[in-house]
Image (cartoon, helix red, strand yellow):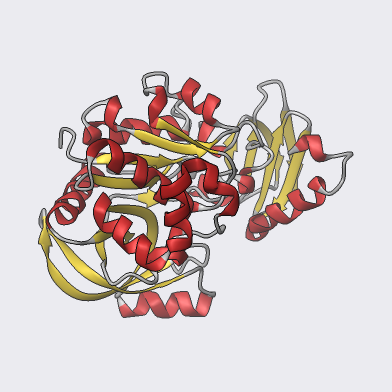
Length: 353
């Protein structure tokens, strides 16, 4: 593409469901979880750089606490392309502020893409081809394009997008109007969605022209856009904490979806790592593990000197990192955030976060 897209990496998340490996000053996006030796942030930057054309066109929006770490992870990135939010207000303020900054530098016809810092992508050429098609759509029409991943099972931890009428073809890929977004349905609803063939997973990736989204934000989220236009990052303390899905995507009439089939996982919790690394062995093991009658489990030991020994366990996640050992049933990993709240409320354990 050679620079016709300006990618922005959303890298302000805490990655709490990957605790204890992910902590306050070393969140998930700074970790290498796939054995490649590259962090998730570095891998994301590497796959987006050919689309940007050069480092000057690649941006990151993160928290002020993590900005120094982002710069260390991506030393080639110009410092002025790392936007540091003074406080986390979810993705809507991050998208709005970044879009304003990019429009000021490149103009409102700039085609911008927003990408989470932490997904796994299996087919890089397929990913880049899909992005080229989405960028073409955004450059030529008043569209906010999102990428929908074809679901392979009735996931309850992902958001879903319902495809409406087909409106055209870009890069040999069909484009559909978005009928609706649905956040994390229950299992029965997810099964119904899959049976229709009209639903895809929401990848959290968006592509649009800057002026299109600024106009839509002015209509649907003026309480975010107007303070940012007037005060910049100084407005953050007065902004609502809301996702871009709720603030804009569920309200706009300009949402379109391109079904994507390039191998994707959002790496949302430890079960995603088990899926990613699963081989022919009974367990997924990172580090040293000695097990007796143990199956269907993920055992992760960060320190090469640590050995995890298990007897008679099934379908559990065991993570050993520094001064913490986590043991949780696979079907309850989403509750890790509740445990972190307990630790935060106890001064004796707050240093473990």
